[in-house]
Amino acid sequence: MKNWILFLAAASLVLSGCGEDKKKETTPASQSAQTTAANTASSDTPGALDAAKQTGQQIADQAKETYNQTKEQAKATADEVKQQVKDAASQTSEQAKAAVTDAKTQAKASIDDAKTQGKQALADLKEQAKASLAASTASKTTTSATSIDDVKAESAAIVKQITDAATKLSSSSSDTIKEQLGKLTSGVQSGNDTEATGALQKIIAAKPSDSQMEMVSEIRSNVAVLALGRSFEDADSAATGVVNKAITAIKGGNTTEIVSSLQQVGSQVKLTDPQKEIVSSLAGSWNSKLASASESVNKALEAAKSLGLQPSSDSAK
Image (cartoon, rainbow, N blue to C red; front, side, top):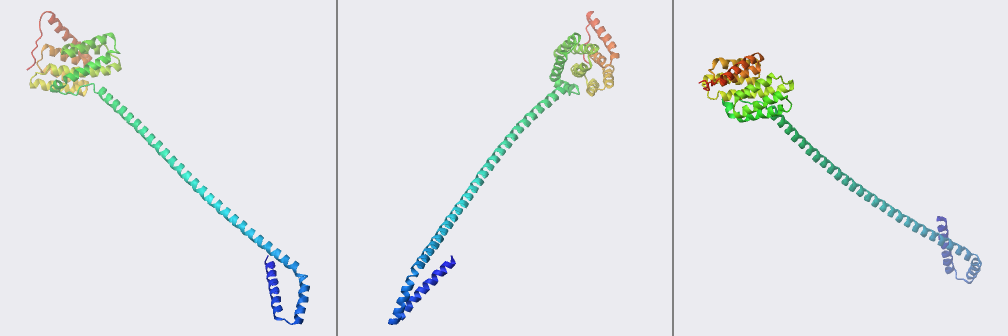
């Protein structure tokens, strides 16, 4: 392409130079020579000029076409790049939206899980609290009273504890034990402690099973504390001190100390016949060896009643 351009430029200079020379030489001879040369050249140059023009035009057309093609390609490339950028931005935006949506979904799921777990944990705690309360209530089947004054204050609660335990034990007991549990409950509720303690001794003599004996022991402790507290509520200070020691021993659960303290009540306090019966029955319920003696005492008292001999009802003062 450069060669053709140079060729055209040289041809142009040559032609322009010929024109200048023609202007300068105006003599007839020179004019004749020029005319002859021109005529000779004119017969050769038209084809070359036309070819040069045609070639130049082709080159110009090709250059223009190349330029246009390059321009179109550049534009297409620019449009493509723009579209790619737009697509990338769109994809990024969609991805960001999707990521946000996923994050929201996961956060909601986490919150829901936390709420569910929290509710379950709260429900479990409530159930545990209920179970603990039930266990605490169930385990508190013996009175906390440790003196005659305590028994006065808690007598209603003690009666309820005895009644509830007797009802529960009765559902799994033999007919003999059920009968005595009925008498025990009746005596406790009516204030007839001699009947209650006598029934207690007969329940133990019926030899409850090991599982039943655990509940019987709780009933025995409550009945003993209640009977001593109610039977000696008007006793003098000396008698009160001895009885309170017996109540404390019963709460301690040591059989030897319980029997010893009950024997001290029998030996150190002047007892009425009902009090003798109560103390004797209670001692016999903890010591099988004393049970027969207690039974003998009770039978003697019953015989005296049948003969019209009323037992003394005066409390030790």
